[in-house]
Image (cartoon, rainbow, N blue to C red):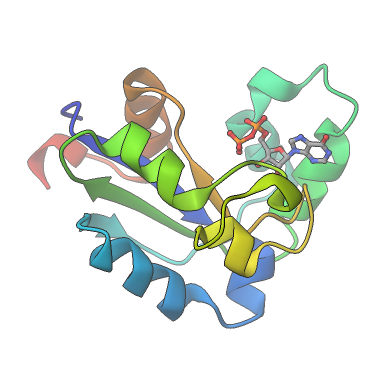
Length: 139
Ligand code: IDP
């Protein structure tokens, strides 16, 4: 994946509460092109694989349960400076600390159910995008 791309997924709480459309609208309004998009369901095992980096953290088991509790909407997005600009758009992990107007401030329920994921580096954007979408370089 070129470095002007990032990976995101709308998490189960936001999908279940009917916020997918509003969130995608905010993403496009912020200048991101949706390169790839689907609605899918993770098993707890696959959620565990996605979040393997957190496997030693106390919240890991709950996170895997939560992330497999309902459909998610993974996407690959394109924009100059995509990773950093997208992290700004979604806001802090804990919605209590998220800036006004960010996606998490508007739609997150809690630290765990925080509406949306955003890759934290170009390398992880590539790895995470490939976790859900094949042949992404051709999109
Ligand atoms: P990020 O998603 O903002 O990059 P990370 O620290 O990578 O944050 O954590 C991944 C996800 O794990 C968070 O988005 C959130 O859903 C969950 N999480 C992180 N810290 C906690 C916590 O202390 N309690 C419960 N869930 C957490």
